[in-house]
Length: 187
Image (tube, rainbow, N blue to C red; front, side, top):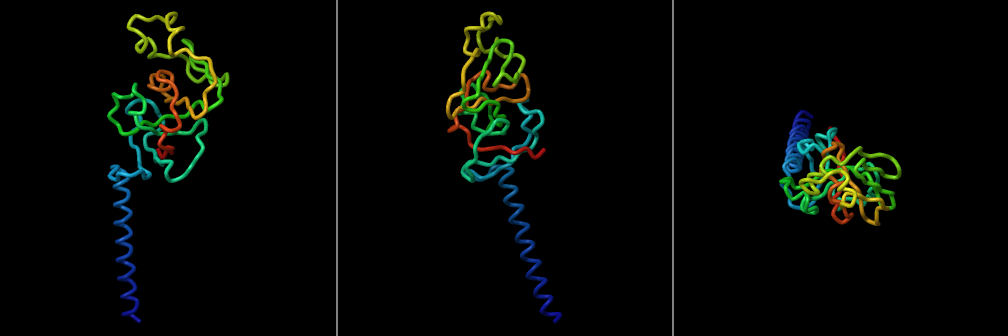
């Protein structure tokens, strides 16, 4: 009986070690993004670009694993190369919150941003920097930032929760095809 239990314990011990090492390797690969195909991965310190103040660690799950509808309030991620205005970012992905979905009424002017008559932001702080060097708020009325329209099919208005976040207020809608997947806040 002792030999039987001893052999079983050794087998159990080896399988535990093997499982532990496999889990450690997978977590390490997810953390560092060592895999070349889309797998769930962890995003660390999303606040360094000051766009999502409450999210410091998130799980990024690509749409390849599941087909989910994108809804208002969801966190999504995409490659910065998808938006020319984000070309300065060195990161592999950008995480933003979906604020407007297809068929929502979007109003953007010098006083702020409204979606379905609910105020989302109070002003466009970087608008004068992006328009021209000497632009005033009155000159921005006919500029690309001012909108009063319904959001089109397969387009999303995405924002960060920081007033200075470089988001859809400045570069427009994000196409559904540009969105890689959803992000889920862990910390």
